[in-house]
Length: 85
Image (cartoon, rainbow, N blue to C red; front, side, top):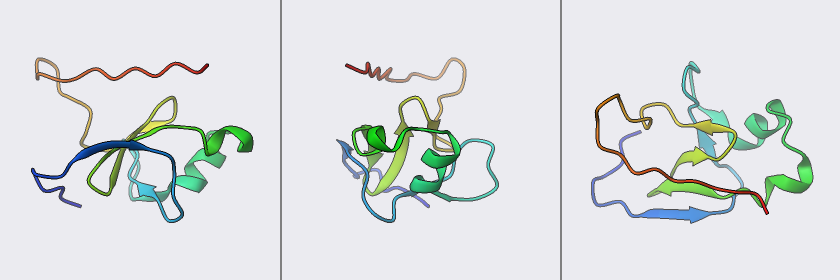
């Protein structure tokens, strides 16, 4: 999936049908299945912030970065941090 350069960045909670392609995975996965596989407690799943570019889920803190979004060494990048409260 190609994200247009004009696509806005956003932080939101999960929505039905959300998918991403985790780094190293052969294809796209349902976010719901990824959270279950990573043993994220059900009570926490709806409270995780998702960093998105347009409609694409790019990062789920503590869970996964989507393939192609991790910066390469020496490449300029933003650093986003999330702390559980």
